[in-house]
Image 1 (tube, helix red, strand yellow):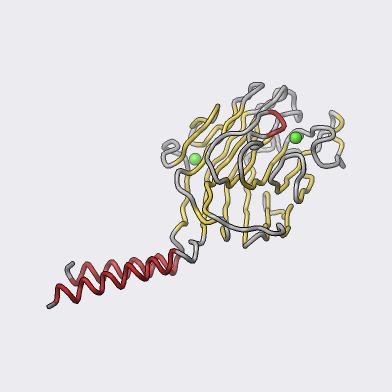
Image 2: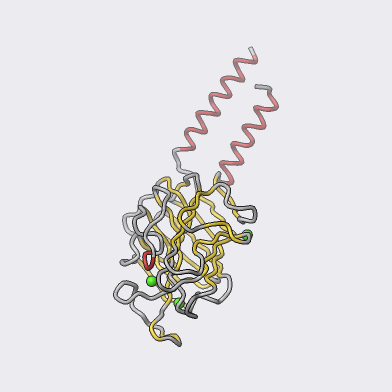
Length: 254
Ligand SMILES: [Ca+2]
Ligand SMILES: [Ca+2]
Ligand SMILES: [Ca+2]
């Protein structure tokens, strides 16, 4: 390898190590390249539509590459619009990281149940005896929306009730995750700050799921930014690669 190229390669490696290898932003302005969509998910007007505003929809989208789920930050925008019955839109979406790409159950299962992993749910339809206790009463009676972190929709690890999320424009979400400690903000307000007991990070597919039931809404996701810190194991590999290159350089110099 020419000396100049070798120096450029080493510089690139070090800048990757310093900056973190897996920072990326996805605007979906030109479609969903780099992701796989499942079920009813599809590109929609420069964003991703997880469900159309029709009953019985279920959709998901996941990155085609895995990232380390030990430490990451993520942000995205979502919108739940055109609900069939005013604030009784449904059923909500999740931001998920899973061991296998795919799609889960519909209705109150938010397209997640059946997938193996974790999710942050943005649940817009209150299911009696299933969702966390209701503390707010909207104009249509019990319909508390909530954010939760969970491995199962029916038994959240932590949750917080929220204002109605349907028909209130785009919402911005920021998530910070550090070896089980998770903080979730929506529109600049913190709703979750929780430590997941016994959490163990691994390579995971990051993405979104969503579903509708008898109630529905058009559920959109956009401007997905993810920055995952690479697993420590990649550093020795990088080091080995550098050593091999230095060896090659010496060989060619002779
Ligand atoms: Ca977009
Ligand atoms: Ca609602
Ligand atoms: Ca629900």
